[in-house]
Image 1: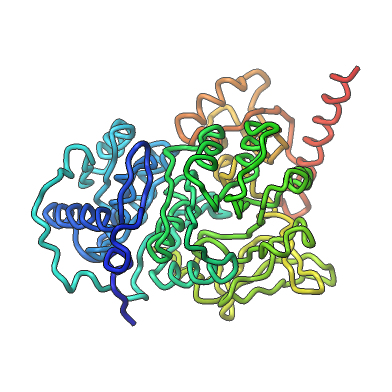
Image 2: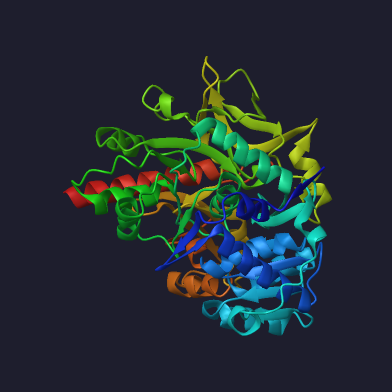
Length: 499
């Protein structure tokens, strides 16, 4: 099944409507389409063609938006790279996907050059130097049609083994998620969606694609800033915004006693279960929070609370979107179990990972690894993103990845990582380390060791040196015991401060 390029269709139907606000500039859909055609033509001149996997290492910007649509226009596959990763992490991702083109901006040039030095046949293209204006737009008409089953993007999501997995998302996945979201939240003629999440996350990328399908503008921010978000509410008449709990807390704090404008009709809150006190605070201030449960593997939303159910189902992620089936697989008779999903929004596969794909898909159902339950009316309540997952400021962190790095340090015999509560970030990683000899390494040395191998947000904020790690008879780490120890230690420190 084929469909005409979404941006080309939108530019034909509503050419003079605003498509994008970024900084002090804005583009209509006609102007955005023309600029994308220029970029697409330049991509072709640089040897980028259909089905090629093209990595993008850039901050949020108008250029990023152009590239997302231009790569689709020529049938290339977008591979967004997290700008918070370090060189060896990016190197692994590019090698895993056999991606040999990396487009970067000035802010990430040093990092891109470091990766290019390691991967000999990698072409690192600078946005500023490579993509100029006023070039021939020789994109053929047949290029403006794509197959819905073709891959649009490969987004990396962490795996329980500590290695990230590349979720292959098709045009059909994005299309069905956009339509299902509109059926749930409604589609208003004056809608304006604020994108302050990174575009290398599915939460940010999905907003760009929905905007051309819906025909509504996006206000794009380079990064999250609570004061800037509040200004966008007031000055740009933003109606919908996607946030995680940490961001929303900061927006509320920055807002103070000032009321939110009536034009703001929906604050989509994802990134893990929301703190109850945050939801209650929003209810008191009449902030239209709508909780959502989503996955990269499902092209963003899986279940979202409908606006009219917000107050009656506080804490729920709502019902599955249209076209998505959801069930809970119980290990015993308990209410809570693993969340399983299937439907048109669920990814095609994990790239270059047949075993990982087979483990995730069983009897037609995708096993999310997340825990939750359904109430009598079918509303989903998410208990945990994953048993061992640490969600820090909306970023997913798997302990196994950090543990693998720590265990590579010559002074350590073993290591285990758990998440601990943090007022600013929700959670941060905490490491329990078994040393070869007492005093053989310090916490500062381990931090420096991790900083060379891990993104900053993955570096443990605390290191505890222990004689051994708790394990069961079969040698399996009892991570729940460590979490209890961390909670007890936090409680003692809090009590000490009160005294």
